[in-house]
Length: 234
Picture 1 (cartoon, rainbow, N blue to C red):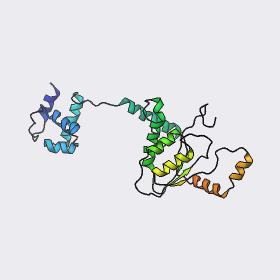
Picture 2: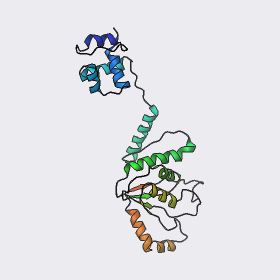
Picture 3: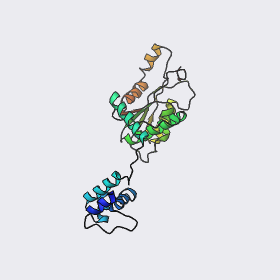
Picture 4: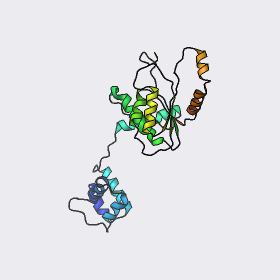
């Protein structure tokens, strides 16, 4: 005996007349739920049956093959990787992006980071910003806020002699602009020639205040740098 016949034998007496395009209550319920996207309670009202009957119909639709649920295995693989990263490093969250074009990885990672940061920002936050290709991509991807939320963006890294378009100053300024935030740039070189010069600079009142702002940052965005021959500081 087929699944449709089984259902017809046990269907509630109050079931509304089947529309001519459906040959069973199972098919009708599946269409209302999966195609018309009604919730189970609304499906029950349309069919004039109990919600329990709808649950039974939908189960029959899946078991008989009338409805096939397809899973994106790549998405679930990313979810599994995320959870493993969280467990290994004690993280509260980890976003893993699809492994598509490796030449476009910086932009895609940055876009994901930008969306994530935008969802995490709270009024009054102080946000520390480093620099790099992915940080710049994140800054460019953040939806521009419409209202001032009393945010402060502080530069985490000193300046370098590089001519890249993802300098610490630019990344910080762009991030502040997108977030309608106060921008605090770190007005000092990232690397100095002597220990003595480092010690002198760290005693300057302006830098003391800037490092105080850095330590106050509740959220920080940075990229994982390259330690190979392509490193900016190599």
